[in-house]
Length: 450
Image 1 (tube, rainbow, N blue to C red):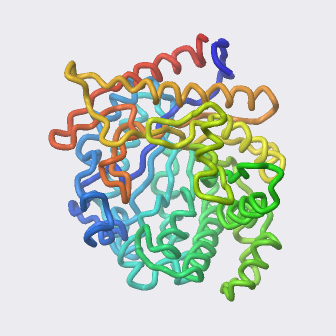
Image 2: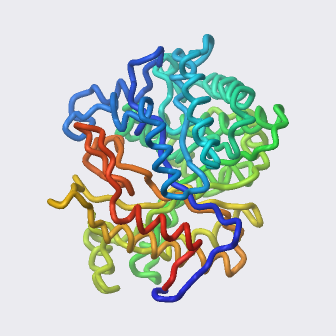
């Protein structure tokens, strides 16, 4: 898949992605309420070196500078999220006028440069005031999300080209089921119920969008790390892969596109003594027609019977490791897009909504540059497999690199650097990495020279 010149369709959209909780900062300014991550991050040991998101990239104060970077990169679209607690400090009720003004200013700046906003309503950062009412364990939170969504569509609908209800719903399971993410609850039933209520919020949010009758488009963003057996003929490994896929991305794709959980998933819940509180019409509500699907893809996950099996298999395949130790497997995007078309989305337009790689504490060289060839290699690999998917009939409309700039990476704090642009967190100075120049040139060519 290397070396061949490729050109993408004329209207293909190239972009970069961020999220509010990871970039905005100003966590305690201008009337913003706390999110569950603001509170979780203050529990000692939960975040790498107890690093807080209070400042992050300071996008709240530096958005004009960052929009100029977007302009200079040449991206056609900027994927971002709204901070629910910046707009509604208590999660519902009184709106924060300074929060409204901030987002209007951002959208105005993007419009000035001809950049389309692609806006996610919920990227993990539930208002803490709602968590005090049990958060996503409380079915009422789904309706409060719908109310928040309705406000957003009315207030910003004429400025935004694409909306997504949710980003990576599995993060809510990790926060309520495993305790590793905010709000830090632990219990399988908690995680599964929270995810159901989150999906209900998605459906209600789409219904709210349709009620506003705007001309823009709405979808959902789900991450897929397909589990594959190390030894395809090994029944035990195949069973492990099937179970892990069913409990991860398939537990979202099935209700969103088919209106119900799979027989496998329902049987697993029963075998584990988990009875979800599900309304009679929830399936119909969740499975709202969508205008596009957003795929977050980073790699696959190999599963073996014994520890070390997956690493050994990767070495046998040529030792294709990323700088961070994960497998480099760009064919994952191709495999996943074909699976989605076959089993779920059909001819629905799809975007790669996140894709990228990180290094730990990636810094600048003595000459002030960052030579991140690993990131260029990574993105190029995925771009080539994306083009093959398009050639085979996938209606892939665009690609968003994760991320525009280094940011606060949740429990990894500032340790993992995903950005095309380096951020010095002491000074907030932005420095283009080599990958940013390379991505700019890719956008100008609308493809790869070879």
